[in-house]
Length: 153
Image 1 (cartoon, rainbow, N blue to C red):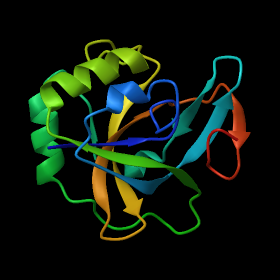
Image 2 (cartoon, rainbow, N blue to C red):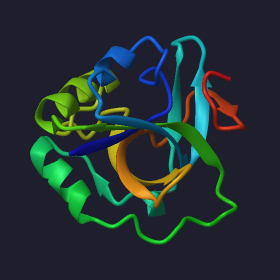
Image 3 (cartoon, one colour):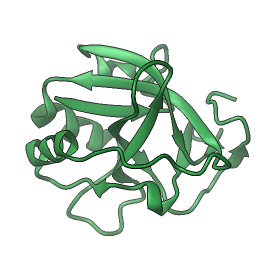
Image 4 (tube, rainbow, N blue to C red):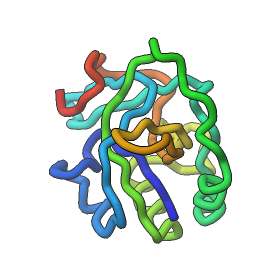
């Protein structure tokens, strides 16, 4: 199984949602971090606290899915940390799903200079316990801060 948290163009109703077709389950969720809008490009960027990152994505896609299943979400982030809202998708095909979304996001696990990193984060759910999901984050924002953590603004 593979769980991904999306906050931009992969969400339902957005232009790249087709990459998420065939999901076994979809639900609302939120991660600790900050959201930035890049209106010129038509997508947002996520910045997360380093202490939230449980693992970094690799080119061993099945291994990344297995790692996700083995790790615990850990203790909650401090409540004063802002939330970024999005959707949680669960898939049964990590070997094909992750490479396709990595390409879309411009993440190359072999390239240290990729703008985006695929990171494993604890995700808060509306109902049920926290879980771990892969998300795409950047280290430095380029866009305009979205204070309410929801995209599109």
